Every structure is written in structure tokens, then in C-alpha cells.
Image 1: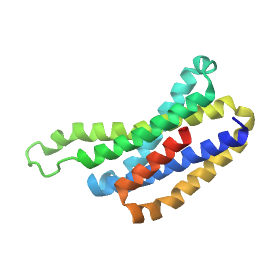
Image 2: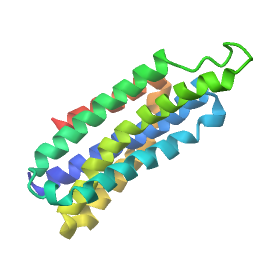
Image 3: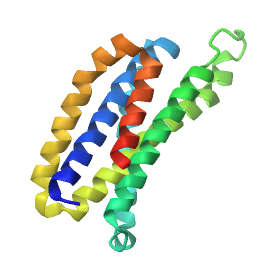
Image 4: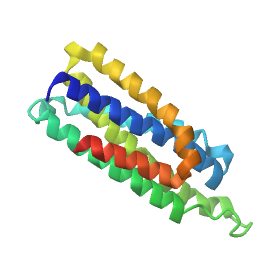
Length: 183
């Protein structure tokens, strides 16, 4: 793949990831209450950090892996995990009003599961982006520019997509975009 193709892939994946992060903030504020909305940023950083750490720890093995297949697999996994997060948030919201006695302790495992699953798209994105930056270190300045442009576009698209599609469908749109990047 040419350098521009890799840059477009980095930018497109960044669009999907930032769009997902902002839409998750909105969905968390509605379904899990606004107190937990900030966790979208924390979950994104956790997932991306773990993905990058895995690339670092497996650097010797990844040196033998064909990069384009790795990136395609990570992007498709990212897209599918975004849709899985969407389904989980829509169908498994915490039951805040299920009773007063021990309500928080009953909700805690569900919240941990939702937040852990929400980190999966960012883990896949971290695996892809860290591998690209590591393997193409000589062009990291251009790739990072693609990353920043994609992140900015993801932020710009969040408000219109939330207005037009609503939160769950905007997440599906982000997942479709990530899958398209992988194809």
C-alpha cells in the first residue's frame, strides 16, 4: 500500500474512534447518567493505551506480520466492537431503580462489563495505530498529521450525526466507517 493509502487509513480510523468517543459520552450521559459521561474519555485512553502496550510487547512477532493484513483486521475488529458496544448499551443498561437495598452493588458488575466492553474499539484502534506508527517511524510526522485531521473530522461529524441519527445509530455509523477502512 502506498504511503497515502496508509495515511488515509490512519485518518479514517481516527474519524471512527473520535466519533465513537464523543457519541459514547452522549450515550453514557443519557443511559448511565451524566455522572459517568466522563468515563468515555477514560475508557478510550485505557483501550488505546493497552493496544499500544500490546504492540510494544509483541514487537518482535509483529515485525514478521504483514502490516496491511494486521491493519485491516484491527479496523474490522474495531468496527464490529463498536457495534457490539452499541448493542450492549441499548440492551443492557443498568437498572438504577431496581430496588433500594444493595442497588449499587447489583449495578456495579454490569457497569464494569459495559465499560470494559466499551474499551474494545479503542484497544483495536490502539493496536492498529501503534503498529503503523512503529513500522513507519520515518514518516510519523505525516501519519500523525493524518491522525489529527481524522480526529478533527470525527469531532466535527459528531454533532450532525447525533442530531440526524441519534446516539445508537451514530455509533453504528462509526462502526461501519471503521469496517470500511479495513476493507
